[in-house]
Image (cartoon, rainbow, N blue to C red):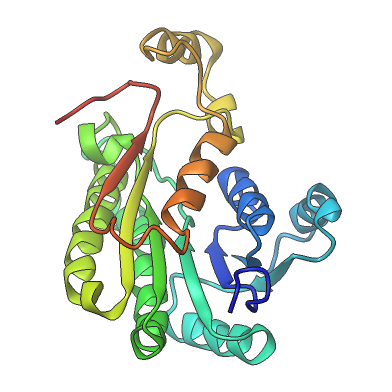
Amino acid sequence: MSPSARTPRVAVVTGGIGGLGTEICRQLAQAGRRVIAVDLPARAERLDAFRTELADLDGAVVFEPGDVSQFDSCAELVGRVEAAHGSVDILVNAAGITRDTSLRKMSPQQWHELMRVNLDGVFNMCRNVVEGMSTRGFGRIVNLSSVNGQTGQFGQTNYSAAKAGVHGFGMALARETARKGITVNTVSPGYCDTALVAAVPAEIRAQIVADIPVGRLGAPGDIARAVTFLTADDAGYITGANLPVNGGYFMSF
């Protein structure tokens, strides 16, 4: 069957109506995927804005509510998606939160809230799609980590730990699923032009940009381009990799 005649691959993007998530949804849809954007159900204003932003895609992206921090919610979500749209072929775990403070001030709640979304959420979603992908012999999983998972960051012991864990999880899962036609990769964004970074005081933001060799913040499209590349049908020989997209802010061999 030619690619043009094939039923579109179904892609689920968690954190799908966030700053990076919206652009990931857009680029996947432009690549011919049927995209399901997943986010918490209580964000009506943001959801309206999201739908307006993607109105030109003629319904190629749809929204489904879900809480990635809850295993049962993820199981129900995957069931709804597969009943309505078909089997999940592509999973992008982009959902994430911050609870920044130094470890001396960090409460157990701040630690556990972040872990439930940023790390447990990756397990919850992957666990609920990997069996079907294995049975069908095809799957593309991309988990979003962060440059701060590679370097550490002051006030982010919880975030840095979770984001480092995301890649460790991905490498192990990549080994488990490689013979099943499933690839599992990580994208580690640097500092991007999103609402989160826009909220940083101007003088600190200027210093961040000064430390980035390419001389600018990343754009959501820079991250989405990497995700789209790794989820392509013909990207089957790349698995267990971490693709840093950080403008040279952190380089390693």
